[in-house]
Length: 86
Image 1 (tube, one colour):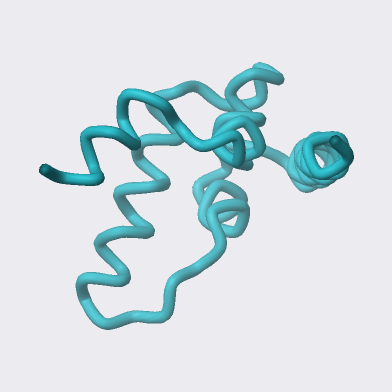
Image 2: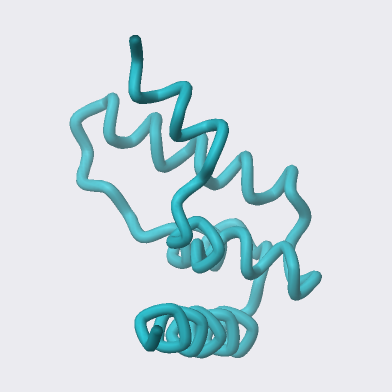
């Protein structure tokens, strides 16, 4: 009995507000670029480095611009606000 399998079967509502997913849905980055950035984030943590925000990694890689990132964060904030009302 693992809780991980039940999470995979029914993702939490907060997954709809993940920044990377929003950037992909907006067409600013590809799923492959997101995967690469997430892998870098994971590798940094495994190496004992401080975890960089995903947006910072995507900017450093040149996968999205600052305006795209700001727009995605605004969308994220609106989705979270809408999700908390109800």
